[in-house]
Length: 235
Image (cartoon, rainbow, N blue to C red; front, side, top):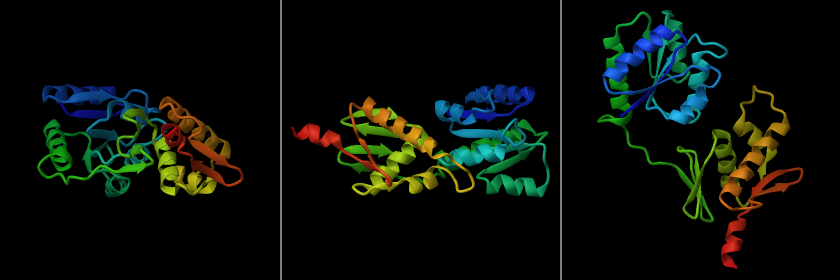
């Protein structure tokens, strides 16, 4: 059963869409906390997102950009805005289609089925999953999963980005500035302590895999992957 996530702050519209989607056999999630859209996205792993533009706190353009940082699942914008520039902005920010309100539910269903076919069905382009491997450690980039000795842990996007950088640079050092640029865009000011917090979380993920000291601090420079698990295996 394919999963659809609805991000719409008008409860009548959201429930109307949910009822029809259920009728057509879809598994539907309604987002109700509009500050935690990505938390719901990670939790439910939808096959398609219906996304309003006018939302509390952050608009739909912002949330579409966040989704695009880690997923290519189809995003269809829903909006009462009818200007050409709004449709251009929706596509420029990563959307796949745009539906104006009020809408005919048959049009919504046809566009949903079209996007699902294009992404997963007969018209889909099959892409090979990206996997990084170093010293027996495997990082599954799209699924945000780290595996060692057939044991796996789930990562956040930032944890995966840090580990990807460490694996890419190994056995060299991943500089602090390089990590900051990778994790946050240049327009965002980030206290360096934020990077320290994320490195601590990465170390905890390695501890869940039974590995201590997997991330080495190189004072004044950055961090380096330290494959201590290979030393243990060789004893």
